[in-house]
Length: 252
Image 1 (tube, rainbow, N blue to C red):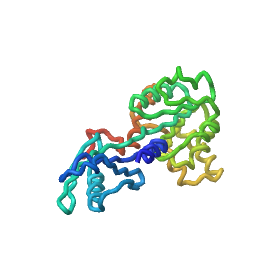
Image 2 (image 1 turned 45 degrees about the vertical axis):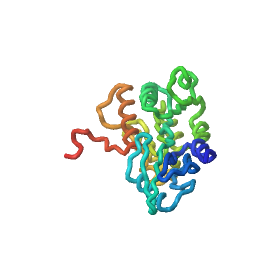
Image 3 (image 1 turned 135 degrees about the vertical axis):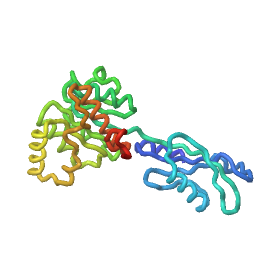
Image 4 (image 1 turned 135 degrees about the horizontal axis):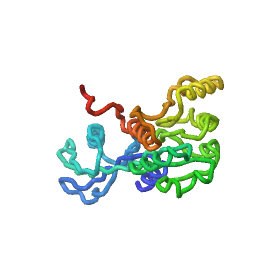
């Protein structure tokens, strides 16, 4: 069981852990036994099919917010109390570009417990003193740095580089990946030029349609910090399933 938990942790995935706390009638030998359900729905551990189905139903019907305990009744009338805990990996964000927007953006994302990686090829912009809340700061070309990173459905990619050519390098390195979110800053004219270039290079419309550009929610942002807020808000909406519309308008 602990090897399974270690595997989940190392693979940066999530898992639900159900530990038997009590039973009626008492069965001291079973206390402490665990069931582990990973993000793919695979189950490790032993229990009856009937009990397992009740646990799965509890998991399906409940939005997990904190550890809880609950009782399950076997067909025979035996009762089992389980403790439900969870391994959750932080959402990951890769920020490409270490400029004036990235600084407040990384700070905001860090305050929300995102695991942030910053990439820039300039030492004066890619350093820990500039981004103290980042999990990692990489000083390397965008193409080389992105080739070393694991990008998956738990990852948001934010392109805020200093120029057109760097944006294209980042898109070429990421557009075909299995990311959760991909956003790029820039004017509509500049974005159209970049998309046209990638189309000419053979990038499919399906891939290009996954690009969110211009990046961020429309809040009338003008300053770097305001733009950072609009970007962070869109990223949160993607990960949490939000609509991005004012709460005062929801349900009307």
